Length: 337
Image (tube, rainbow, N blue to C red; front, side, top):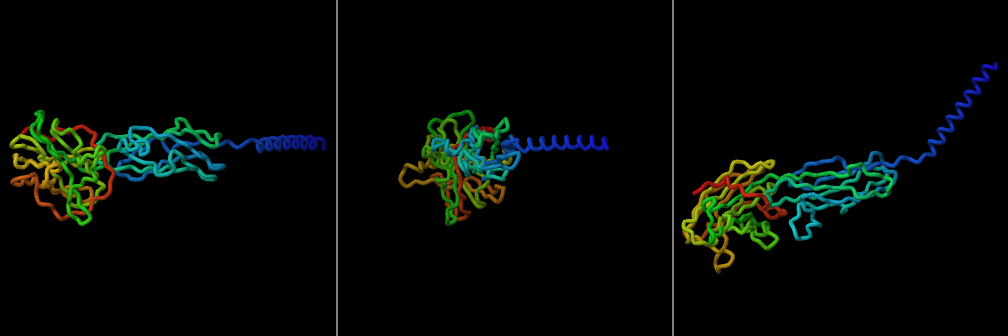
């Protein structure tokens, strides 16, 4: 009997200790969640449109949580560009703030990527956590994510004149893109390629030295027929030999160019934007179907002017963000004449 009593007494002591420990645990405050971006890196293409960046907790939010963040990197954000620089993307959700609601474990930042007429190296967008409310929620260190924005697919078009390494101080040629209007007729697409300084399509460089102009045509444009003008704007060189090169770009790699040769006399000079009765005119056409560009026509030369008849086919050009070319000239497209 005594032995049983001792065991019972010992059991009661252990039970009392267990109750005490349990009571202490119930009194401890819950451990707050930690917050981080879904990953440390992410890779996208300019043509991906709207993409998401997730901010995640390691457990469900005990109350509404607000995360504020800052932006950096080599890509230009819409607000930061402030009309002084062409922007590469915009924040489509709440600006520099994301909320994670009570009971949930993630918040989403949406950003719109812009297709443009730049042929660029990879750019970066860096999101960094600045603060969290309530303050008990702590960011995981490092508290940022780097998004790499890769060049979208499309068509690189380049006009070059004369011989490589030879300058022509008084010669100016213009490369101008043609797209279909709402009636399906090809017209010079000034609005699509206008630059910040009021430039006309691809008339973006001091083009007498060196002797080229170019643009990149994003693959997101509608299928249809397009064209270019290779305009002899001014100069005294006769004949003025030139080439137009078309090269597809897939996953940042330029394919073998299709090169078309042309030659103008002084009678073909056409200062289309200043002289009365002149106009920019179509010199060559090509087609787009899906991811394929094809049917690059030879350069059409009239007896006078830098012109040929306008086409009446093609589909409407889709809306797009555009800006200046920034990458170096691939002079290997051209051989000495």
